Image 1 (cartoon, rainbow, N blue to C red):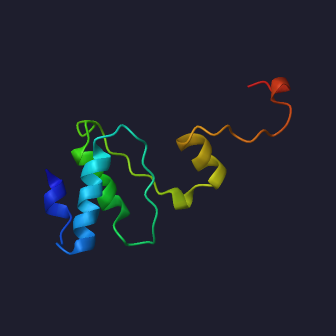
Image 2: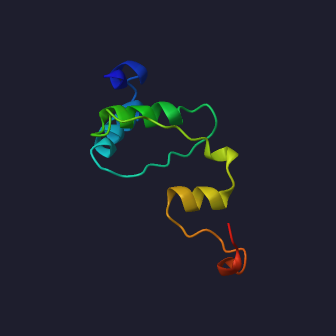
Image 3: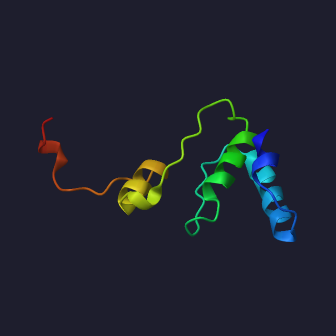
Length: 92
């Protein structure tokens, strides 16, 4: 697995991070990893994916910083989209 190869370091913090990744990977949760640019969020997400039961399925990273807040909430966390008005009268 790539997990052991890609996350390096053996400090106490890195050991805690690796333990959390192993623990989280067992659950079928949607995961949002937040942090500053360059801290390794995608690397951690890939590690969770590689250790998860979904490892054979595609890994799809999404840069949420480039999306409006309302779109992130509605698409990833099943929050209803904000209503614009009387949608019943709109034809497509």
